[in-house]
Image (cartoon, rainbow, N blue to C red; front, side, top):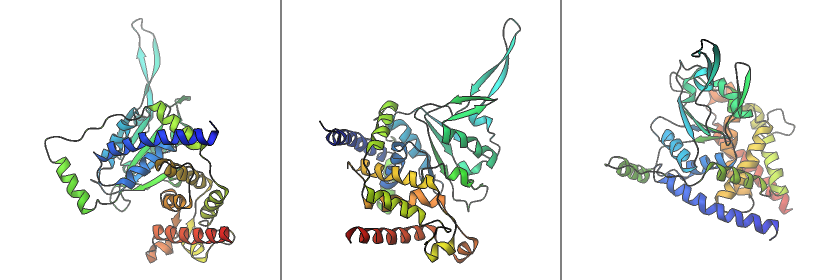
Length: 338
């Protein structure tokens, strides 16, 4: 069997398991298929996700369900203003043996798991938030001068309340950039909310069961990176990311006036993986232009910032991303057709 045929067979087999995983998650997290797909895409890409939404929309329930369905050992940390880095990473304690000798012993923190739920991450101080920086990038932590590796796979799914709410600390740019996607969790529509009421106010709650194992998830992540990406899609990703950098030559006047800082190379890497993940979730061998358009906002929205003047005018970053993406995609398609 040739490599493309073999790859397609593997994708078809994985598609069946992903369909079952989505159905299992949807029994506990009702009526938000895009949020579920973006969360699964985060894990398939081997990255971290930031779920943003008001309290009570099911973000914590979603992460707990995904942890079970994907067969990952998960821990939850409730971020609060008094949380310290050692409460996440762990610390050394001095123990006295029966013979009177003393030695330090490392007590690992909750970060030593495969899926860490950082619940309400923006409730903790920047000092505590920064405890995740090394773990999210290098998949290891350094405590008391010793570097310790984390489990494989390792993912962080953080929930965040809108910054406008009192008692929150904005995440620093370096930490935002480590999240593959910003996953916005909206209110459910009326029909979905009706289903939620019926499903959650009875005597029994829907249960979830493992569909994947950790090793199967790692294999899926490897499969995703083997998926081919056409030159036209690669060029579109580069054009799109570079179009939001206000100092880039040839950038649009609107971007130059409204964007304070734009996405870096990590955004292009994230979008390259994201379009593959969307294609994989739909059982396709290779990503398309539609995948780029669909995944642009989750990849770019937390990697950009509007100027003070733009925010004062009430400019909307999501609208800017959608408009510019449609314009750049249209021009790219026209160039290919020509």
